Image 1 (tube, rainbow, N blue to C red):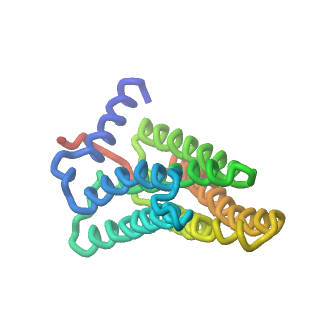
Image 2 (cartoon, rainbow, N blue to C red):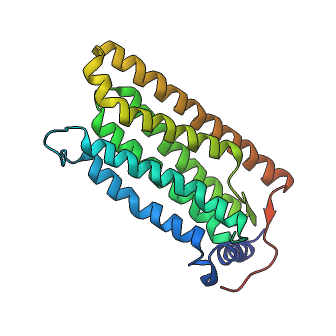
Length: 228
């Protein structure tokens, strides 16, 4: 395939996934909201408590924001399917919003629990996984291919990430007060290990799909350029 053909294929994929008429569909608006909530969550979580009598108040507020974001992730998919509002743009926005929220959550965890090295390892693995996912998507686009909608293993990985991180966020203050340093490390390390395992599993499954798609062409193929 020549460079010109590769560029045309990339343009075809771009115009397929970015259309003006899909920009304000409700599921996509919920994705925008999730993106806006990321800096709000990180800021509130890392600021000193708004309530002098409760040092954990900001942690609970930030955790509520994170859980609300996770709920909108479920809600946008439900609305898209229920009311036939699925879109190619949504297929791109949904995983982007998920990954940026996960990145924000991981950074907040590293700052708050900087004494626990497993949390830093989780952040590094997450960043490496997402960089590899970005590389795979670019290669797929240049070869006139696309992953299509998010796969079950990606969704499971995201769900467990939020569940486990939420447990650490909410339980963090209690763990620090009610357990020894060794016990606190053991609890948090165990939870982080579970999340790390599913991140690696998701990466492995997407890599196999990527290689299989390039070899056999089983995933979505863009055959012609669509208008914006």
